[in-house]
Length: 303
Image 1 (cartoon, rainbow, N blue to C red):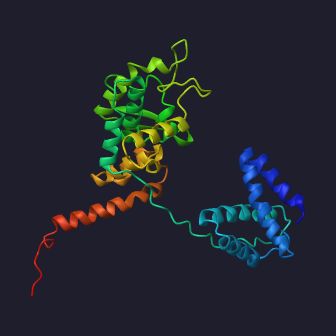
Image 2: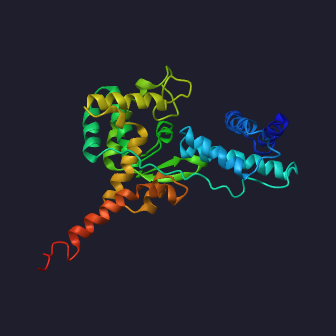
Image 3: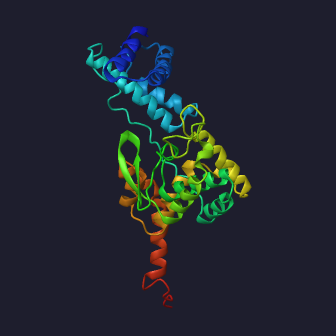
């Protein structure tokens, strides 16, 4: 395979799309794997046909790569051939009618309400570390924030009469997230000891300051704190993470009657299809409603 074709494509990604270094490295790895496969079939980018691409996808499946990985590599291959077609290096696009592998969406892990209650009870305490962890846990479970959104909250984040957080999420988009009274009280207790975590001048623009480079608590450190809390609460630590608590927020809200559209707004999902992964909870709730409230639910079978 003429290496200059791949290099030309990668250069286009940088110049025209502003692709980052890590993105270019990922494309390079995926496409070098594809072109290496073509070379083993005595093919090149100028001569490859749809059968070659299908054979490559079968090869990826045979070596056990996940469908999501296969789909990502096919996407890179498609973009490469689109570039070659646009630059008139090829007169056709052999990837045009290739079906993408179905990437089955896994149901998210989430904790039961009882397990979350147990974590909260274990986190509560009078030390500075306990007050900080209790407020972090409360806010995360009460709002469903992404961990990156939680740890980078500004200070001050709420005034006395405020009932909503203004959160800056993905794509720099702002959204309003309601905060309950219990979480506000947990936050107030933490604010009594917040200066413990500030730098020597006792000033920080972050709600959860840290002496690290970012100036606020890192997601890795928060994850470690949650794992240790799970062990203390006698809960399987592999089940507990900031993201799992976000899923718990969503699942428990739906189970108690929230609708998908409201949940979408609170989670900051751009597309409702992302929120629909939680419909397994809705399905169970609908079954419970029918079995409890339908007129025939408790009717005896006629003999």
